[in-house]
Amino acid sequence: MRMLVVEDSAKMAALLKKGLQREGYAVDVASSGTDAIWMAGECDYDVIVLDIILEDGEPPVDGFTVCRQIRASGCRAPVLMVTARGAVNDRVRGLDTGADDYLTKPFSLPELLARVRALLRRGPVPRSPVLRVGDLSLDPAQRSVDRGGTSIALTPTEFALLEYLMRHQGAVVTRETLIAHVWDFAFDGDPRILNVYLRSLREKVDRPFGRACLQTVRGVGYRIIDETVGTAAN
Image (cartoon, rainbow, N blue to C red; front, side, top):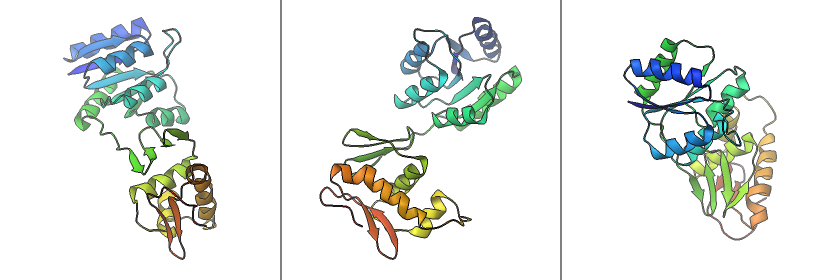
């Protein structure tokens, strides 16, 4: 098994390499984010142990950026993020950029090894396919949306709604289904909030491009179709 350890502390990198090699792993070490991105593109690693705080390099490239870029380039190796940061938002950010697990310093080598074994049992990370409706594209892995090459910024709720509709292209999705998917079955707010979000989506992904993909099916719900001309339904 071949492993990449991304750690800018020479002492920590040496300790990790020695401990992992003792367990039979072939270990490469990258001390900067730039080196890590290059090495991940050149070698097929079975797992990557990635520190978030990386100060080597000019300019420094942190672990979040490394993970995002290697995923964008097609690297499917499981990634274990290691950091002194323990805040929930940092863990969420790490997982959202493509990491598979998170380990907070200080940690023991046996715990690291156990996490690595668990990741290896899972195997490579399958990349979510890019969803397309006409020239509208949504990448679930990168959390990105564009139309005809123009990037579109969406809120998390707008993204979730658009993703669900695009996964069911052409089908009429009921209002109840959309609310249950994006909020939950226990949603007890005003269901008219859905109208607000769909209107906002149209303003971002349809109207600026002269499209009418997002359509209202009166009395039932919504659908998205491959429509290249016209004005969006009211």
